[in-house]
Image (tube, rainbow, N blue to C red; front, top):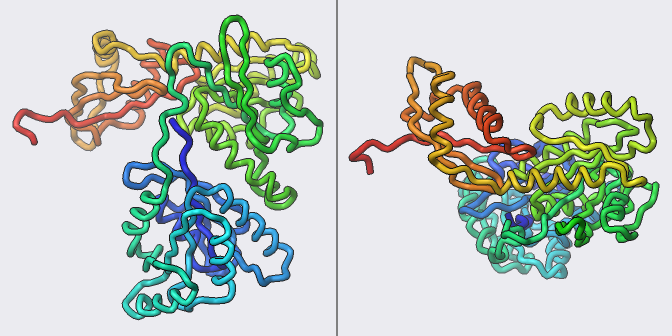
Length: 447
């Protein structure tokens, strides 16, 4: 659960940075176009290489010689991305040779003091690869020949990236008994996250201001209430990406990455929503970031002091509708200003944290599973009749269940959802993402 290291992809416009991000991530997450400058803001995505997870950051095209205000703004974004990164991949164009923009990029990276891997992209054949020798005129020691489009040289690039990453750190969010519960408060700007931290801490630990974006970096606050200890991480509000690109400074834009790292350091993510404004699409996107990282979830509807009591029920129904992908997450009504509901919020946090760490015994699980199969056996799919043999929990925080079967690829997704719902119905796991994996049972004599 340690925070993932960050790999930034930089280079001048139209050298194939977005294509490389898509190749490293294994899916199309960045827009790819021949027109230079399509990527203007940074784009974050999760990647996995040789057993190591990391965050890869795509940046806009770097052109230090340009007088265009947008290009200069992109340059500041790139500088911040490099500052945040653990490793930098500088992408060059194997078909054109070095340019002045490449030279400036190399100069920037030398002064950053970060591990840098130079990769000449578009080396789609022997002719392009022969041009790579020109890149050494930039004064760099080694250049990898790659083709993000065709996958050539990507394996060697991934090995170089993993070798340059910092060593694995001890799990700093281990769920040892007696340790504080790590809570990340996430949400849109001005939802009241900092006010909630101050209310819980009983002091003005965090600057509070009506202007959105007051919080820049995640701030850790240790709190003890009722004999329980909590480590609160207040994060900067995450606005829609378009707003970040159009209105904000580069410093605010990088807060998105800080918030992602804060979520990865936490055990419980509390989505703080502005009840006066109602739950918005951006709240769902922010919450999805925490769900994707398999964190326990609590939803806090804040600022209820600004609304009549009669609106509370309607707001909760509306929140359930907007956040329908987490029907298992508890919703708590709070007011950071008056303190109303704050104790209930901490009760919900402790409950989901307990379920997050919970492990169910194999015997108890299989007695439950017999009832599930009696109630509804798996349907025939593509002419195959799956048999489910047994279930066991192999991990907690969050829980991972493994079901052994003769036909894992023929378990219909609707039946998988049914089994997950039955686990939740029987054992609770409120506020906790449940993972269920179907694996093929080995027959006697199989290697």
